Length: 72
Image 1 (cartoon, rainbow, N blue to C red):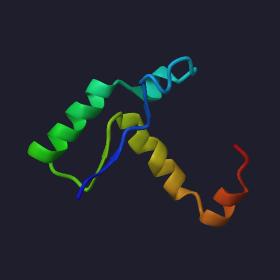
Image 2: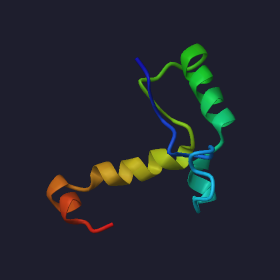
Image 3: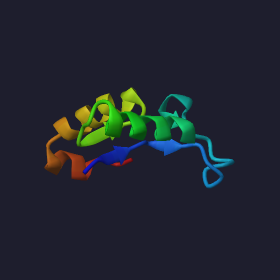
Image 4: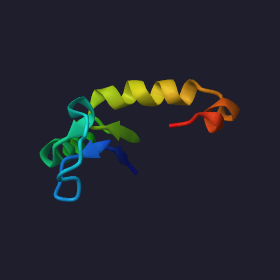
């Protein structure tokens, strides 16, 4: 089983939204990442944009009680 975490994806649903370019993937990038994960390098979790791996590593390192108090 593979979990795909694409982050923001530029689609008709997100049209008009101000999405950060560095964090936003194109649908073709998502499809290519899934294809690579299945055929070439099988992983349990894939991030389409590598920057999300770093972001999630930082988020996961924050202790849960502190994370729940954060105001976004």
